[in-house]
Length: 200
Image 1 (tube, helix red, strand yellow):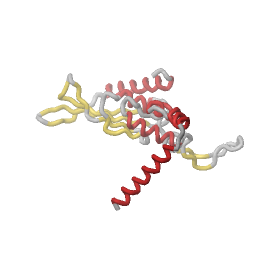
Image 2 (cartoon, one colour):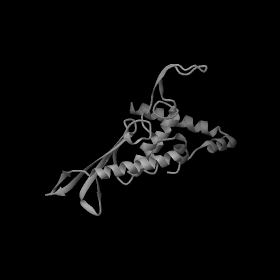
Image 3 (tube, one colour):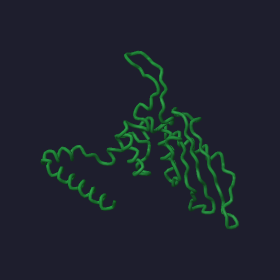
Image 4 (cartoon, one colour):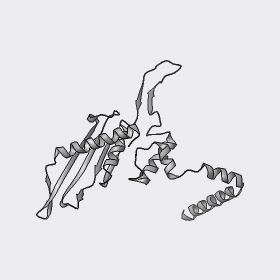
């Protein structure tokens, strides 16, 4: 089986090389002129992931969006039923990403100083790893961000923090400060508004 696969790969490689040799210089120049940089691909796709935070994830999402027409179910989402035809409105149900993309992007950008444990753009959940500061290494916190709804509204964003202190050689949970959660929510909302206006 191994030799069969090896032979198949070799034949495929020879075929690709032979096809490439048949291109004229003009055809090669045209192919290169259509080539795009990673940044152009990411910008064109409308991905919600910040390439500054995780370029590989942003590129993977960008390629998926461009191949499928954008988003999880294409640019228009998944339609159940008929759509508008010849000017007549026909009811349909649309399924897509039920999140405000500005809130999602703003959350990732505001939290870029903390390593992420997971980010689920479909469920709208961001969970960070534990984070300590140099000023206080005996205290650590992690954050959970929940985004729901497509509108850019306060009720569609919830930040929860969990903090611990190092006491008697073990981490002990302490009560988190609600003011800090509210400050983070406000920072994310302000960033999302700037992103929506194109000034962020």
